[in-house]
Length: 363
Image (cartoon, rainbow, N blue to C red; front, side):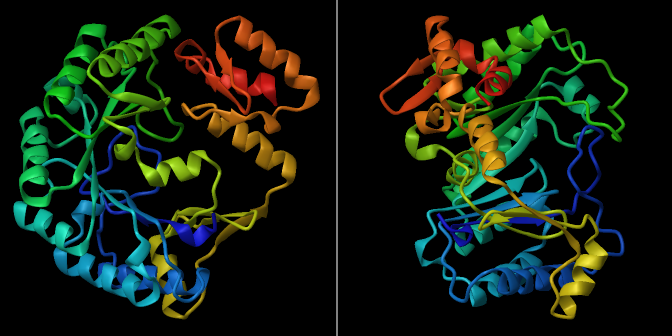
């Protein structure tokens, strides 16, 4: 797959910054939002061949649903002038509950957006308050209904676990209420206490508790009919898996657009500088935004493919396992941590709990 097949657009604006989030984001403030939505298509023109025809498009953030219909229309119109959307199989947009209206949803549908990833995080009022979220549990359910009735789109619900002092019963309640919304997809992310965020000084739950919470999600969601196709992701069916993220887990190239966005093109990994003002200014002059880049070596690529592939129910090709690691693979299979097929090594549910450690053993 070429980088033009998968495109990620980073929209860094948020109403307010959540205390746990380490992604590049900021409130719009005095930012020239029109300048931003005009800059992104210019970056696409500079990075991609003329007439590039993506299969997946992902608008992440930040909070892309914050964009007004006018600004979103300008952004999409600019991209359509440079890209051929005729082969697009999936177009995702991240949204926060209670940050959009029925008319916005209808506009998203008219644009061709096919999938909304809803940043719910929890169905408990106390946890939402702790996480700095502005919506209520009722807002989540209402948002899902609106997306169904007005948009007819696939819906993903993001949930967060391993909060300090979170009980298994609290986590169960969030999971059950998410299932009751009947989404097409549920993502369950363990809270990471990132440096340089307000949560950096908090204490994570004990490892035993983390394992219990993870296992609870697996058991409850698979019993509800969801396919656990990646460590943190559950799909109602094979057709509702996130195709864009699957391409990343398979190690395929992709193009990242926007301030702070990353991409990999022909073995070169780049990252745009985390500076929206400089991003806009550079592209207004027809120049790529400032940032960094490195050429990945073959060993680096192999390590990445092992680490990413082990997280999925597709596993990794046996060709990635070197001769001096075949005994390790056989031992993992004997211990019930993986399954060896004629072509792939696939972790079992028990193995997924140890995916990072197993990746190190196979490298």
